[in-house]
Image 1 (cartoon, rainbow, N blue to C red):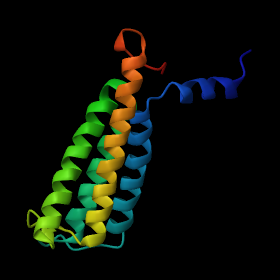
Image 2: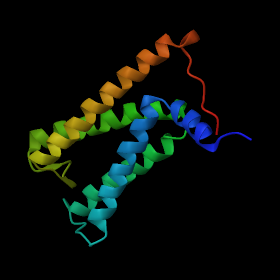
Image 3: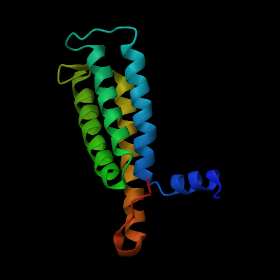
Length: 142
């Protein structure tokens, strides 16, 4: 009989850096989105409801991508691109992104930090893939 804790450790050890990012950032964004939506917020334009929905949807997308290394890498790249655009647009406008999502200085800092962290994760995962035989990282067992 195999030790259950060793099989859990083996599965956890086979996850890529991008998968861990998807899991952790996705969970954080889902919690943030739900915590803002639960008390009831405005969906006026711009409104905190739209901002919370943006976090909720992006968090759910990351959680879905967590399951597969082949999905996680492009999901983190898309996440970095979208949040990068939101950070730039929010910084230029100073009040909202595209007239829908209210953005303040704190949001711009957080969105920029997400982008920097995602870029670091992508670079780390890319280096790991380059070091793997034939540049491939195998899918973890499900």
